[in-house]
Length: 177
Image 1 (cartoon, rainbow, N blue to C red):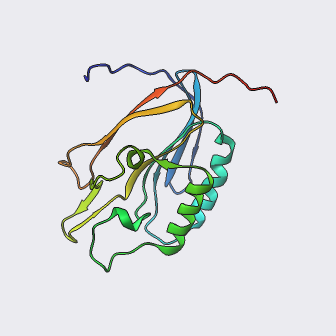
Image 2 (cartoon, rainbow, N blue to C red):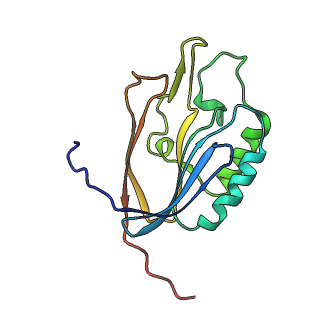
């Protein structure tokens, strides 16, 4: 067990699952802080409707930390790939996802902490392609601080596991209007 690892108190308050099993959303209490945890496997189709529905599902959680782990199955940012020219984005899905990330203030915290790294989360030997299809995004109200993020060695799969170290901060006092 890594030095300094502390057990966290996680209390489930509610959950939502997509009927097609593309995502699961958990409303939880983590160390006394409300948060939303979203796990998603995006579809292979170029269908932006999923992100429209997902954004509606996330609206009740705006204002609390939302941690979103996803295999996007599409190139969200062309600067984060090294692949053959025939690969590309799924234009509608990618555009809708980028809009949603901007509107809801999602940040790729790994990229924020390590902005110039050439580390990739996915490699496919058949195509000789490296990409950042897998990401953990964070929309934060300031009650969660990311201390460290690191991709681990890719050895059991074509995906590299991402380790995240977060810390909860004391709740901020309300500011009178």
